[in-house]
Image (tube, rainbow, N blue to C red):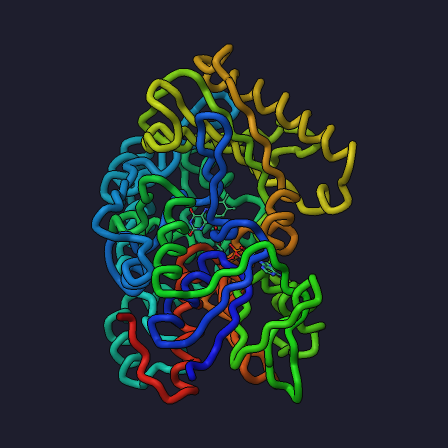
Length: 494
Ligand SMILES: Cc1cc2nc3c(=O)[nH]c(=O)nc-3n(C[C@H](O)[C@H](O)[C@H](O)COP(=O)(O)OP(=O)(O)OC[C@H]3O[C@@H](n4cnc5c(N)ncnc54)[C@H](O)[C@@H]3O)c2cc1C
């Protein structure tokens, strides 16, 4: 008889765990509370349009251990087209002055030196930091399974990076940028306004641009939903069991051994191992009642900064609207959308680069902005509906102001709030990527096991500050590698 693994949650982490578990001969059941898999990596259809919620960039589209995971889980295959944008974002000040972030570092350096020749030394230094980071490769194996030779090899390969880690590992983006003391007022203004309210890690910023420069953080044509559908197909084709519309209430534990799960309809599913790929906070503090905690877990959930939730307003436009830059980001401090003062600005994304989002002659454009969880946590009923209506009105005016061609052509508007995300996926405080990568926690991952609890593993965005799809896919794989080790089985990806 095969051993059985029950997996809570059918997002990218749960699907990844399910696929690797089947490849390694375990019986599996994924329990997903929503009607579909994908979790936050999703999209929805309205009339002729598909409104995508997640995928902007996927680290690992070209090479490295994340790429291996995407190939093994059918996220990327011969049929999937990858797009590498030339422009990451075009940022606008309130007066319309603009500033471009290019994905190619040479091109960005040239552009920055042209607008600020007086800062060329600092610009080169910053761009060189990014070039050095290009050698960064994540580990293939979880820390528990790394041999000392893996660590030594990667130490020598990454020596130039280790110096950067020592220099900037504990610095915020603002401290990092501050040291350059840019003299050019335009540069100083735009850098000063990036991540201005957050303790955002300097290294996270440097590494992000390095991934783009290597063309290893592309966009998959079709976006989020086809991506997770491909994962689900692979899981089902491997004869994995998927149960939807069922919510896990508790993890059944006897003598500190996880034995299975209790569902909210009262039924129980027993297994040899339980993996939770659901929200981290509800797993630890509700399903396990906070009984298995380490100091680090307590510190993380008590004090690490979270990503602010976002509001997404999607527009279906009955006209073809083209642009050279998919994302424009507006630094409009005095703007309000609904009840939210958009201190962090807002972005407008035009999906014209992906023809699967709208029929020919039509366009999908999306406005996104951060909105503090405290504004949403108690909002319900009429008040909530009124706020959604106000967001729709304000966003429509905003879009017409910035892209006047849409006037009179908007056929569909859809408002997704932080409460929408929480309702469909249970994500804690609407934090769509979990813990913010900050100067305090970068590279400080949480363990997939909990102290004192056997037969149980975690996977998903909450294990790695910065979150996102790559750690979700990777921690699903790592959970199965650890279970194989426990079962004294050789782990396979075929
Ligand atoms: C607007 C937006 C843009 C993003 N852009 C990017 C991007 O460009 N690149 C990137 O890498 N990442 C991006 N992300 C982040 C990325 O989507 C997430 O980090 C990732 O999908 C998390 O995957 P997960 O499997 O860990 O968790 P989730 O996607 O949250 O999945 C958890 C699953 O568990 C289920 N579940 C929860 N509780 C229970 C329960 N009690 N019982 C049963 N099932 C349960 C949920 O329904 C859900 O399906 C973005 C996210 C958003 C919202």
